Length: 344
Image (cartoon, rainbow, N blue to C red; front, side, top):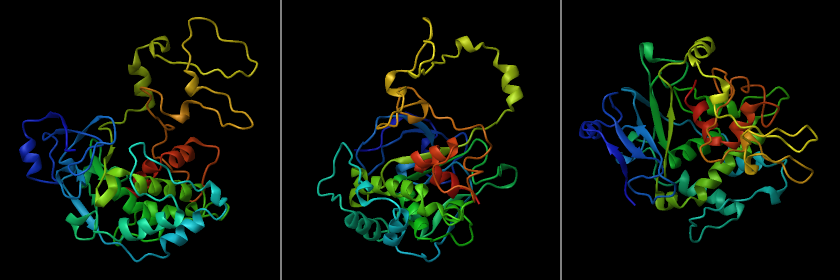
């Protein structure tokens, strides 16, 4: 397939002529899940991007300045990293996922998956070829800086292959010289019980992300795969401002209620209910379903209203615990990896 435009701004040519230096007024709407060299593997959803898949590497950001950093030597092989991530897990629980689109000849053996990471993902030509073996990071200046590498109202996008490359490097202990990225630091940061996140649920979650890259047909033959976009709002109002400016009763908010069959009095008529696929009581053999399972049509994800995802996880937890941060990070490893990688 080829890249597909949802709409095209008049200034698109100026955007394409200046990769990685996209001005706010130069806007191109591209389709997520489609790049210039890979087949369509997802439904079309539009996001505000700059040059997107027009670059050989696919990396794009709205920040005018980008810095790139070389990788430091690995501290362990990827095979060792996988062994440590699953050392407390029965081998039969290691399952390589399958894409509906299929990929001919893909083995589901652990050894073949590890070989692919070593020789294809890490051993093939660098997915950040435009940057000469270095990994690019947006670099806000002056008043743009906002606690991490994205300023207010800015975005950055990496391809799936690039993200998996970053994750695989980080799992082997390779860091970025000159940039103390939070992902590699987090994986090796001892938790409250002297655990290491890379050896617990976090390490297994990132392994599953890499398994997804292994079987993704869009990454065959060196393909970059879909773009993953990280964006930050231009303004973060206070809770008080939101409450004062809302001006709408909750009866108009479209809220739905999930009531388990737990013996409580049944809800009356006129109350919207969550569909069964998003509201199932857990039992001895099934985990059940609630609002955190995701996948309902039109559903968005909102984590707790903290300032930074994973802020209290760093140096404290190594996997699933009692909070929503751990669950969002574990079940959506792309969110976790990019959040930590884009912060020092």
